[in-house]
Image (cartoon, rainbow, N blue to C red; front, top):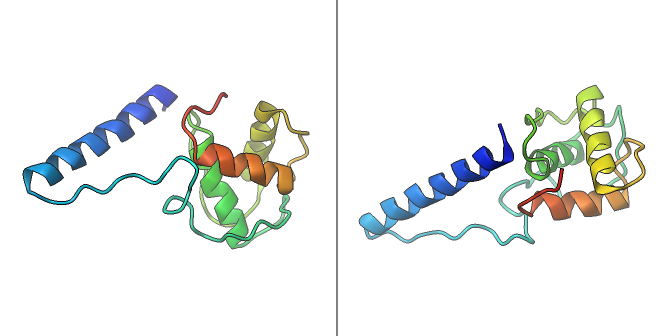
Length: 124
């Protein structure tokens, strides 16, 4: 799915929900702010160093954030297992952002991932 189609789809869904809520006199919920991924990826707030072979809720958090950050590519499974597919996506993300490409989710990768998962318009 292209970035444009993903954004158009999300915008259309929000528009339909807003019109439906207004038509029925309901309250319209506002989306989370761009700087806050609460409500999107809420597996954990822990940010340990992760690498191929890691598993658990922090890996689920990374996988979820990669899905939001890297629009325009197929979503990866949020299964909590840091296998070859997650490793490939982490490396692709690091390369695009200009970080050292090592496949390790450390403090710098977490920082960029948190930013881009909460933003619109990922540059890659």
